[in-house]
Amino acid sequence: MPMRAALLAALLALPRASAADPPPLAMTAADLSTLIRSPLPAFVAFHPVGCAAACASRLAVWQSLAARLRGVRVALGVVECADEPEACASRKVSPSDAPVLKFWTGKTFRRYTGPLELRQLEEYAAAKLAELPDATKAELGFAPAAAGGGAAPLGAAEMVQLRLALLALGAGLAGAWLLVRWLALPWREEGATMLLVGSRQHPTERVPARGAGEGFYVFRMCGSSGEMVPVAQMVVEAPNIACMLAARGQERGRGYLLHVVCEMDRESKLGKGGVASVRFDASTSPCLADSGGVELSCGLTCALCSLDAISPGPGKGNFAERYVAAAYDGSLAVLKPERKQPRWTRPSTWRSPLTGALELDFSFHAGEATSSGASASAVASVLVSHATARSRYVAVADPRRGQLHVCRVLVDESAATTIGSVAMPPGAHPAVLAVHPSEGIVYVLCEEGILAFVEVSHSSPPRLLSHLSLAANSTSPRPTGEEAEAAAYTPPALVLTRDTNFLYAVCGEARGAILALSLTADGKAASVLARTPLDPSADACVAAAGLGLVGRREELLVAACPAAHRLLSFRRDVGSGKLTRADEVQCPSPYTLLPLGWPPA
Image (tube, rainbow, N blue to C red; front, side, top):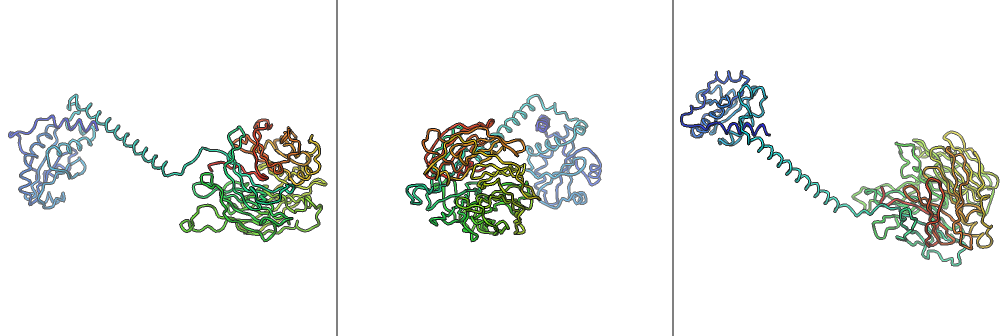
């Protein structure tokens, strides 16, 4: 741009044409042929047949332009098409009522299409000369310095102003776009952790009425302080919520769809005994809403796990959004969402409720039970122990026989096979499971306070490595009467930290305290690190039915105490694993805990 301004300034600085200036050079076909063989630039005006009047009025313009160009030794020739028809035909100049100006670059002709006025022609000439190589400009004797001292700075200043204007325009457009985007998006609150709590009526309660203020509860966890702030609740009839899993909603990751096992009360026959679906979106009111469900024909559902809880990496295949539901009689079924309708035909963009997809039958159903009473169920807990690209391996805790079963589920082939079973230590009834995702170790916590370490693999039956008695670490007095009944009904609880360094358990005679266990590097052994009473000031035994780790670094641990109608939170030292009491809130019969990040990632 500065070079072009300098060339234009040089042209304007040349003397203007006077009456004494000679007319432009008249060119013949031979002259045009000679010009084409020359590497030097030139301007050629063609006067087509039929433009006598217009061409005559342009002669003064050609004369002035020729004088300017002659100052830099660039010629301007005029070809009269009436006299040189072949020359005009070779340059594809057709008869018209206006002259045609072309620029010879030294290699090809370029046609000028602008106004035939002197000012515009001078600018066009300056632009074309600016495009020439420096060697050609030197040969023409044109020096940009001849433009004078004030021209170049003026061009640079104009360029700076233009750039600033463009930057201001771009910044304004970007700001407007961001404002529109911000106004169009839904309000997103600051990140937090929501704790969803499911109720389960305790049989020792004085008032047997169901649905009185029980169901789902939502609490906001306030940072590392451990404070639990009530947010919302959804009261349901005959809650008996045994476990909860969550899948993210479809639209922009907003909200969750909870898959909930509503355990049927085997004495009063309350509840549906199936898997219900509940929508949860903290940005709406109400934030909890029923979304349907499924009842299983194989039996009364008591446990649920996601087949995609452990994935070997890419290629999840048909395991995404697949779940295994377990019934009291040992039956298993694979569940999947309903077939999705086209987006424009359904009002909601939430994932669909689950439906029964495949009922599985295993050989471990046969045989006599080794116990009765509290352990009369054939299934207490299920989870995915390990995975391959085509299959998932499901561990099933069977308290009736005192065994842990491992099955292989192939969703693509709609088949399942039993890998094997392993017996727990004598007199132990497995109740709750946790898995070490990288070492192939399943932790089995039994009702009697025995923690078993079981090794699982793809090709061989499970193998019991060792076991640890946690009841020996109890310093609480043995509960009696109603306390004993409450403790017997409250199942053990077990949770493994994400870094696989610590286990936290509540079980057996130590149900009044949380035991922190430190795992070895390979996860195959553990030692009791600390014992934290649930409520050292309480006269009665406070038993916990559920444990949940909360926070990005799992710096909080929450315990659900259904008989005491309380939620207890503890601050957790991530390095040492030790717990410190943080907060306590009232909650009707809390049983199942599900921490969820909000908003969903």
